[in-house]
Amino acid sequence: MLATASLAEEILQLKRERRAILLAHYYQEPEIQDLADSVGDSLELARRSRDFEGDVIAFCGVWFMAETAKVVNPTRTVVVPDREASCSLVESCPVEPVRAYRRLHPDHAIVSYINTSVEVKAESDILCTSRNAVAVVNSIPPEQPILFLPDRNLGDWVQKQTGRQNMTSWQGSCIVHATFAARKLVAARMEHPGARVAAHPECPPDVLALADFVGSTTAIIQYCVQTGGDEFIVMTESGVAHPLHKLAPGKTFYFIPAEHCNCSECPYMRRNTLEKLRDCLLRIEPRVEISEELMRRALVPLERMLALQ
Ligand code: 13P
Ligand code: SF4
Picture (cartoon, rainbow, N blue to C red):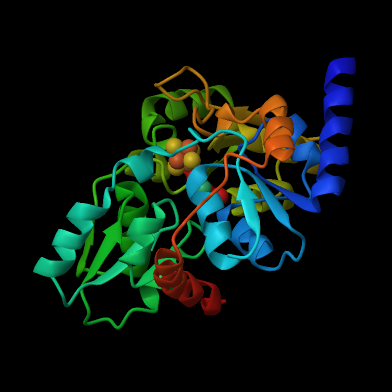
């Protein structure tokens, strides 16, 4: 405990010296969330990165989120505690097949989830997050066909919400949410019959069909805090338990383990630790470096998304 306290002091001291801001996604461990200037979902963190005026953004999340911060605020230095903090959705969608698809289907609008590499973003017409994906798809003219990258579960869900027929989804998936099993959720509902179910749209369709609410990380937190009822089954990464317990201390939250680890933790997000955060502020690396040209191209679809609401 004492070691954690002195580590936290070291981080805060370095943060002042570096004129840094600490941004953390809800899937980070509680100790990191508690030190952060802002904790949010991917959309909120992208907006917060854009508005920052200091020198260094220490991004406690995964690499694609830090790349997004760099693209929206290119004169700042952006560091991430662990360079290997990737994402299975990013890994599922290399840029070459996307370019090949674009060549074969020049009439399609490419709508990319923010969980993509900066190279894929640069090939896209507009980006989306789980929070605004329905609005983004609705912003594309109805007659224009869409390629939706790279999460098939989010793509299916958006297709259902919008009724869009001319939409093709890439076949990527999240290593955490895609392995939540409907049979475990059914068992949890039988065990806790009064509980409401909130799920992230990266979950499989049979899980989403059992949910009372589907939304982004922040939307799930708001739903659980604001909705009546004392018990909630939460189908997302268990990092959100921390803000939930702080914001709704009287309520009970159940997290259903995913198949990959018998837990609900993202193995990429959890690579970041307090020690690595201290080290990255000390050394100012691993640092996000992107060519000017790539940043310029990736900014176009990102700005289109941010302009939507
Ligand atoms: P949010 O957009 O809800 O932050 O989700 C990001 C993510 O990686 C979900 O797994
Ligand atoms: Fe990627 Fe899934 Fe981890 Fe989110 S939870 S960062 S989608 S692997």
